[in-house]
Image (cartoon, rainbow, N blue to C red; front, side, top):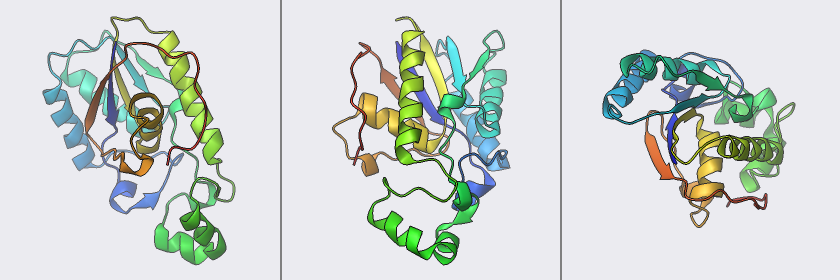
Length: 199
């Protein structure tokens, strides 16, 4: 089985370097161009499943790729397990705005980003457990011959790469860029996995 991870195309909030997870925004024109370029680059791949989150930026990305690559016979499988983390009160703010509005929370976050939860947001551990549980379910519902195009979010893909594919790599060294494809082969599904911070 092969997994092709693809972070959705650029959005305006990416350009502005804002925190956003559940805020539902569309791609920029450059983001749509990124997806058309990916569609060209993956021509010839035998994609059997297309997985997206329930957020617009992943579904738009999938629609562009599927249209360009004549994958209309495949159904986009939308799964909220793979939505980006909810940043609560920090949504649509950049780092300077967060620091100004929530100075003590920001200082604590800089010191230990895994243990600080933005007001009204999702804890890191809840986010991690949701994503990893969802991926285990996806793997168990797949077959060895599947070639899965997984169009997701930066934080989600980083969690999956860190926990399933590159566990020896530093969490912060895993960089997931908009419009970049990451290919992995799944040789065996591990039934046992310990949840924990990848640092």
